[in-house]
Amino acid sequence: MICQKYDYFIFDLDGTIYRGNKLIPLSKETINRLSSSGKKIIFVSNKTTDTAYDYYLFLKASGFEINENQIINSTTVIKNYLSEKFPFKKFFAIGEQKFIDEISDRHLTFSDKENEIEIVIITLDRTFNYDKLEIAARALENGSKFFAANIDDTCPVENGEVLDAGSIILALEKRTKRKLELHFGKPSKFMIDEIRSRLKFEEEKTLIIGDRLETDIAMGKLMGIDTALVSTGVKNSFNGNNQINPTYYFNSVADLINSNSD
Image 1 (tube, one colour):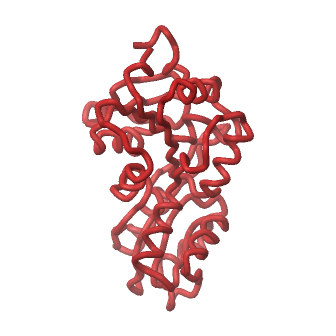
Image 2: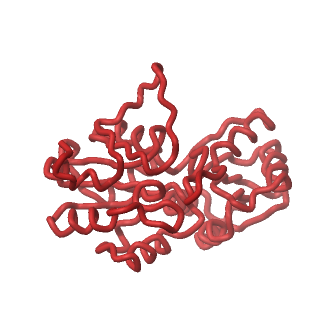
């Protein structure tokens, strides 16, 4: 079994462990079996529509044998950075209310007044509209910082995929001729640093498992660890120019404990 080769595992959540509110078949059994055998596990998500604690509660209620400190999402990473580098600044976010509340909780103030916005933040927003785009654009034209919690183009849901931050970032870059300055989700250095602060791993004994080439697999390459791409999440584009190739291709996370996998 592949799992016997590794002692440390980094799992994506959406599209890898669950899709929407539905667990990927055998994901719970796989995680619990790894945990019971002494493997060290951490979960990393670019999704910001809920808190890391919300994701923990969902997994715990679903029967996963985990603790709260094993969950990281990109909100956690960006709010730590902002509270250190930009305390008491005014920000505007194309993002949902839970995300805005978490950023505000770190001594920053939300504003939708373009002339006082100092930081624009982009992330997944299922309430996105043209008015939000224009507020962000005008603030950027006024010189606001241009950050993103994540850069995913889409997010997997039960019946397909929905528009995510990457598409909005591209629209704003074209609209304002500004380039995104920093992002804090996978595969950023900020996310990697947060993972390393929580999981003291040995590179040659670590595997990252995710559904997205440009975030999960790319981050594994940057970290110098093996990677596994699952087919239960987003649809990845493969072409001859693609330099992001996983170590393994899995049907799902269950392949980790499938005796036929090697």
